[in-house]
Length: 468
Ligand code: AMP
Image (cartoon, rainbow, N blue to C red; front, side, top):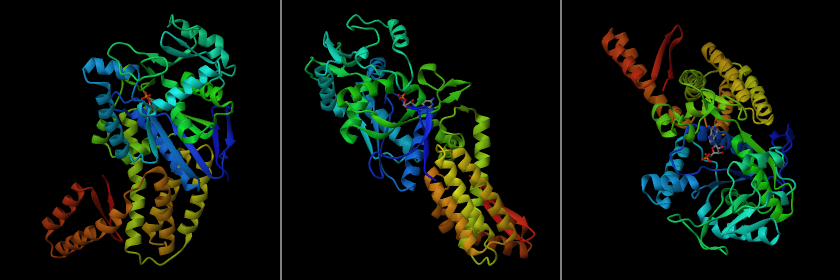
């Protein structure tokens, strides 16, 4: 089955067909680096990480670019508040963001583009918009004249009069019309600046992204992502800028928007003061559990964060992981003869997983398929009924799709190193028990438990699983 995605531009689930061959150009709005990132950001970046990985899994050649907003009002405000230059704030929090992404296994981005490193492209775009008569200079600033782009609002379906009403609240005397937005902001005392044909100043927000995406992808590309708060006015404004410059539409073929991560019903955001930083989260939770927690909801649905749900996610993930460990364990010591039933089930699970992901990247459904396979695997392993081939087939499903979802890794480690070590300690425990040295036997069991290895004595011998 082909991949279908929900496209905000058309409001429909559509078949995904790249503009050129099997190349996918994908752009996702990156963070404004004025503070540490929170788990709301993580929700969006984990979602698009998996989307990029799934596209690659399906054989597309993905070029994934993310911009970094390293100059804007919030950056300047923060710099004034703490007395550190904007440039240093940007360095500090970009580093922090990249560390967070690494910790969460978000590694599908091919290129990060900082706004401040694309000033020539930004100026060229603004000059072109002025030449085309859709932008005007006023007191050293440049504005996009929204009325000159009749399709404005096609992504959000907002009407121009609604924009005017909203914009009137923040009326700016330099603008011809309240809804016009800044492409270039004239220099104010103490702010960072760049030279431009309109004097010293700095770029506006929306044109930063079009400058970067058109620089790397040219006039039209396949996927633009971000969370849903960016649909209006940010993404609508990007469309107005790009289509006015190139005369080609659609600027982007598929617009994908993730749902919010909420805290007690409200979007997690710095301005509401309800944030939980990624750094804090990974101190107390395994990154894979955080990913699992997020991916267990469809990317367009909201997630309501609370500790109980995160805990439930941890328990559920450990159940899945226990099955994977069991399969790795069985494969490492693989002498199980027997039936291929589990292998047949694994093949069906493959198809069901792909069907779920093909239907608008439904990770929740896909994870449910893995739970079914985990149940069947545990049953077959307990009965010792699976053939070595079947064990391998089932394990391959977990490892292939674990790669897409960023779960169950680093896999080799446990099978390669942990297995023989645990086996050795289990043998020692058996020897101690045979010698009726109960104290030594219990000590081995307890020390393993402290390390997260649980031994289970059953009628068919001793089994173990990991709890981290
Ligand atoms: P910002 O740094 O605020 O511009 O946000 C960077 C990206 O994270 C954007 O795509 C935002 O829409 C997204 N984002 C911010 N807060 C949340 C949240 N609570 N839930 C999901 N995505 C978010």
